Image 1 (cartoon, one colour):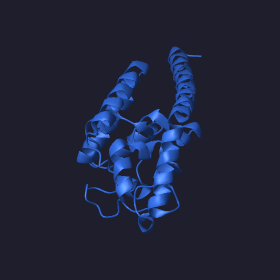
Image 2: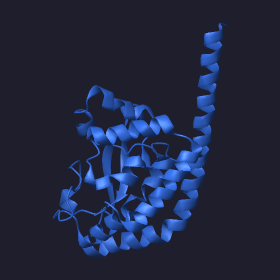
Image 3: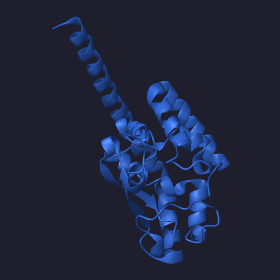
Length: 206
C-alpha cells in the first residue's frame, strides 16, 4: 500500500468514525428532547385540532443527503387547503397561516417533529436546512455541494438569516458550505447555543 493510499484510508476511517459518533449523539439527544417536549407537542396538536381539525402534521418532500428525497415532518401551521408541496410562507401576513400556526412558527414549536426525522436517520440535529426538490433543481452547480452532508434542524443560516434570506439564495448556500468546512463537535455546541438564543428571541421567525 502506497503512502498516499494509506493516508487516504486513514482519513476515510476517521471520517467514518466521526459520522458514527455524530449519529450516536444525534439519536441520544433527539430521544431526550422528544421526552422533554412531548407535552408541548401534544398541547400544540390539540390546539391545531380545535382550530382547524386534522391533520395535525405537515408532511413535505425534501432533498436530503446526496439529494435523496425524504418526507419532512412539522406541526401544521397553514390551512388544510394549503398543505402539500407549495412554497413556505415568505411574509408574516401570509393568509395561509392560521392563528395557532402563527404562534407555533414564532416559537419554532412547529419544527419539533423533525426530531423523528433525526431518529429515522434522514436528518441530523445540525446541518443545512433541507430544501424542496423543485428549488434544488434550480440550483447553480456549486450549490449542490450543500448536500454532501445530512440536512439538519438548525444551522448557521437558521441562527443568523432565517426568514430574511431565502434558503435557496447563494448567500444562504455559502453559509451551509462554511458549516461543512468548520464542522466539529465544539462548533456544533456553539450552534445549538445560538439556536436556543434565536428561538427565545424569535429573531427572523413568523
